[in-house]
Image (cartoon, rainbow, N blue to C red; front, side):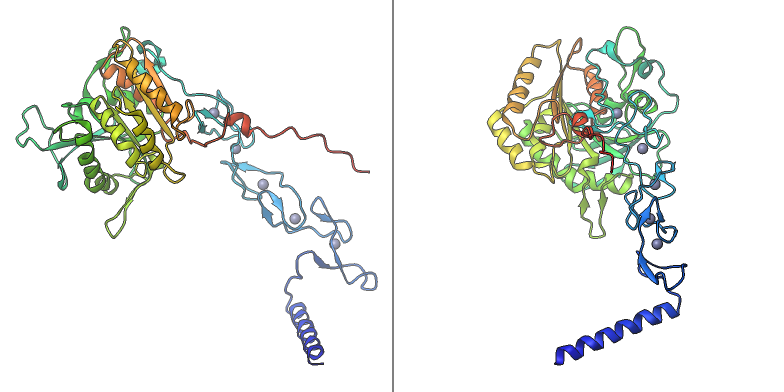
Length: 443
Ligand SMILES: [Zn+2]
Ligand SMILES: [Zn+2]
Ligand SMILES: [Zn+2]
Ligand SMILES: [Zn+2]
Ligand SMILES: [Zn+2]
């Protein structure tokens, strides 16, 4: 008895609401439309949509777009693209494909970058253009070096103490033997309003931070001497890498790599990386509480020679800081230990998107590094040859910057682009839409 009374009251309230809605001209709920036909024929009906128009009453649907499809009438948007966004439904083009030559998206017409998944572009199947001997550089990279250079800033710091400070370039005799240099390259047209990927370089033992960017190399017999800065400027100008920040960070050499690396890691975490995030426009940040917030998808670590040996020490414990690693001409000792440490350091939130190892083949020592690396990728479940790990033997080079510049050239075509997706075999094939059988004609 009591329930019936409640239901009656609810019905009355609902009718009142409908009446007041009609009285103030509020729109009817979607799908219900008041007919313009005589009231005796129909007062309200549920629209039967055909291409956005109601079959029964001729009403036009006021489309509500969700992912390019109207959620009211089911119409698929015909799309009118402007800068990769549809001006009708607001959908952003996903650029699933692009032309390998022109980079143009066949759907929206915009030129889009390669997007590397597991070592190849999932938009066109292209692989990076690797250089394997000094004669392999694409011609324009060495012959058309832009006149506008990136900027080099010099900073100083002391291991395990104080903050990074502006400094002069240190020449041979360092007044304070512990003073370390930090040289930062910002690309031509650097704009603090944008964010940039950052590549950190640990130089070889006893090498100054300036050598990497300013030492000139005869890269092959045909081209004039160039510097690391020339190479970066040219790679950016010719589209081999997006503009980026490069920081060469010295360390205090006081013993073997396993002794130096923990000190370096502390310096990176406590002073160098927070300083770079504050001073330069990277994807990392420092919160109001002073805590450094890393952005490993946008940070790469490169080590050469002793710096590479340190890189191997740092990799397992620093996957929260860097997801791209370039370790040139310097290996590690114990394979089983390295597999165990990498397994501990890597998970979905701390991936290795690419581990590039390289060495010059004019020195016999490259064999040992190659064999160790091969055994590692075979035994380590977090590394897959070709997908997020690969060894690059560079012919006609030895233990010098000519070799390391080539590895930098190769690395920068993978770093910040290649995403590692475990279990995905050939991303281009995997992304291909399945063959859909021809739709059956409706009776
Ligand atoms: Zn209708
Ligand atoms: Zn609609
Ligand atoms: Zn659209
Ligand atoms: Zn597109
Ligand atoms: Zn592509």
